[in-house]
Length: 318
Length: 291
Image 1 (tube, each protein chain N blue to C red):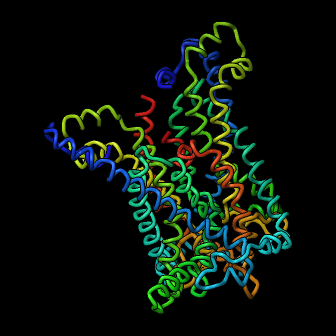
Image 2: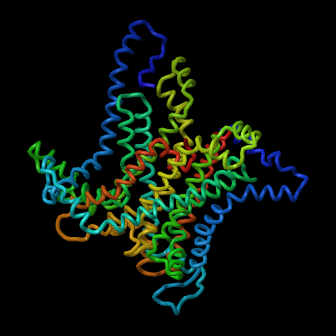
Image 3: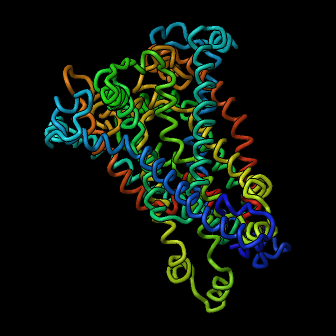
């Protein structure tokens, strides 16, 4: 694999001599041809709509008032950033993303460390761990909302009552979703995203050069020393990658908020507010401005994500 | 690897004996913890399976009725509620978009690995960056366009958007698989005068086919799971399974068993595809960055 990358990195192959320009150009186009359909497709479907969004974000455009459509400069941005609803959505998005990514990253790391050992049934445990990620997000949200967190017949309160009964107590039966709506969403998302983190970190752990670890062990390094000085530095870029990719996905989360609280109880995040602004309120201008804000936030995360991917990529193709 | 490998001094016999005695115990604790954590994570799903096979009154018992008689009532209610059109829509959108993804991605990956264009890394990173653009960034124009050309509530339109959603991941995955084709073999084939088709069939295909299968499964999974596009761009005719699922909890009264049954049926294709692609899942999730 590295051999291919090596030969490709140097650019123009011997087949196309640099002097014969017409032939070289034809050769270059023959090389580009297979790439073009995918490239053009992606530009049309992803880049063009975003440019349109950018344009609409500077317009006063509500589908209910077609006569008032017009340019209004930064007004949408001003309203998005001053309106209580959208401001709360920005805060919720940050809280949701940071807590889901942090918690599932830490859990994922601990579980990856547990699974990075030989033991009986390791494959089974790995498969069990992946399962939450393979439940359709809407189904997972329904599962948490109704089967686990429902105050009357959810599993959580069921177990509380059952254990309480064992001790002859009658423990309170909290209404999880109305008492801690944001935490209910965070819990459901952590359950789904921990496997994601765990898989990437486990792959990172298993790509670490074991002979060096063995040597360190023979030299008498403690397991903490090995973890801190060898495993962790190696794992760092995998941690970064999973955190950044996780953030890119969780920032966009719509399903859990839509199903568990329908944006109520102060849990509406930016994607949900944008959905409401444009789908229910038909405030196209403001929805677009909010969309552009999400894109800016994502670009900041994505720049770091792309840098990490490119580091890993260069190592891999070296 | 185990926590005990700490014993520093190349010790006396006693120290070694202690090490031997202690090692298994900590190993058992760690393995046991791994099992407990795994079971905790899968428990909600198992609970959903059990609930889906209970009658509605039993499903709503508190404390939970673990050993209540089994029933397929929930599944019956679900299948009587007209789930086939949405399920078929999801199948169409996921399978056909995956085919389209492969048709577009394979030539592109070829031009980024076997016979690379100039600045191929830049192109590769362009693909990746489109994956980072949030759905909400283009949702409104895509909606307005669909409205203008009358393709709202049309599964073909959704299918094309799913293609754009998965194309970057699959290009990245396929590129990394194609890069594994030994360059010597390609040169040897060229010397033998093998044409493109023969090279593809006899040299490239054996190396990349398993990868293509995994990439296809991952593309299928992401399309099947998608909600926001489907919710905004489809109505009744092109409704997909996840959208159908969001509208399933409308009735009054007890519904836990049938919602569990519905959730499981809708998740089943993803579970099957995911377990089938388990080994390559990491690569798909990390956009091909981690193997």
